[in-house]
Amino acid sequence: MARKKKNKLFEAVEVLDAGAKGKSIAKAPDGKVIFINNAVPGDVADVQTIKKRKSYYQGTAVNFHEYSTKRVEPVCQHFGTCGGCKWQFMDYKFQLEYKQQEIENNLRRIGKIELPEITPILGSKEIYFYRNKMEFSFSDSRWLTMEEIKSGEEIENKNALGFHIPGMWDKILDIKKCHLQEDPSNAIRNFIKIFATENDMPFFNAREQSGFLRTLMIRTSSTGEIMVLLQLFEENREKRELLLDNIIAEFPEITSLQYVINSKGNDTIYDQEVICYHGRDHIFEEMEGLKFKINAKSFYQTNSAQAYELYKITRDFAGLEGDEVVYDLYTGTGTIAQFVSAKAKKVIGVEAVPEAIEDAKENAERNHIENTNFFAGDMRKVFTSDFINKNGRPDVIITDPPRDGMHKDVVAQIIAILPKRIVYVSCNSATQARDLEILDEHYKVTRVQPVDMFPQTFHVENVVCLEKR
Image 1 (cartoon, rainbow, N blue to C red):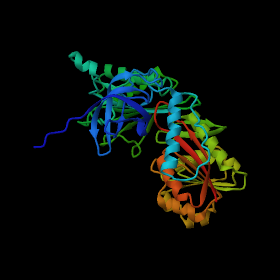
Image 2: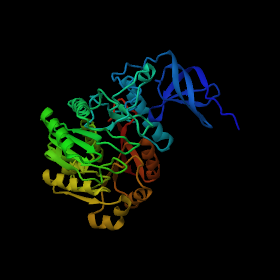
Image 3: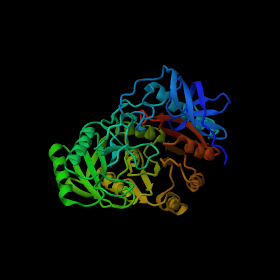
Image 4: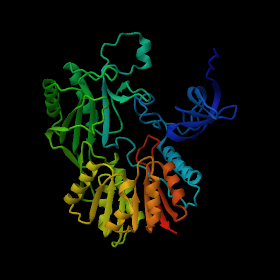
């Protein structure tokens, strides 16, 4: 039997750069790249490799000789274990620099296109407590910290209400305080955990597919409204009503309290009936006087303040003068479509999720917007020549696709009709760059504006304006 190769320890390695997915980059003595999961550019550390590939290593810093001047003290007690805020130990101004760098590198290296000067990234005013939606999981066998394991003490209460440990589908880290969503989010979560434990309500066991309490979702809005959704694995009316009644008593400010009974193998709620127990089945978000209804299954940008900035940039890039037909591809609940509608002749929104389109129509009616039309269906099947003949040839296309970017058939259809301008909003500049390269023969990139929606993480949005050559 071949002897298993031992992972290597590289000593006093200088961390050189930040890479994709929150990893930092160093060079091994043999010239290969090392991707490090817990270091900041400028650190000097001993790195223990955990994987070896043909052209790179993956590793963890195990001993620091020098700390980077780009480091800051993480504010969260769970940082390093939770995995949600991978850059919380990096000063925010450097987070922005590396996000800008990633976008510029992707557009130039993958897109291989001529670019204008890229506008400096628009940072978020709030770098903590900026999310309007959080989802937590219950577990009866929580993740134990190294300190707890080393103590040797028997731990009786293993209930957890928190986040999945990265790479561990069945292990949940119990969260005491999360710095991503403003109060009363933490208070609601902690109350539910303590009350459920004291009243013998079984937490979910993912391996055995058993228990009562499964997940918790909390949504807030800039208007001050709060939605709480509990997902239960099985019905137990007595326990359910006891818990829900006490949540209402403790937090009377809750606008919408709902629940789902879901005993299937996964915890997605999109194919489940959501039951409203108290209040209404939705909350409202507001932007420039427009009101957007958000229910338990709605998609809405999770940073409301930065979403407003993103939409203003998108509207500005669209350069509308009032007589244009605009297509909003991947429209979601039609937020961007309605946001730009006052400056357009007509806006056509297309989205794959039928429920989102119903929300878009309802929101448009509520906002007294009469020049929008919304259609549900697979984008490459809906966005056809027949569809365009029926609804009008677009002067401007706004597109905000998922992380995979636009389907090649959608790109081909855009090239076939050649609108005068395209505004491409993306949460993944790598796939955006791929699509821009295809469009480059017909379009010139005239403006680029990165927007940071998610401080303390490596995620970043980017808006590009393309003008027909």
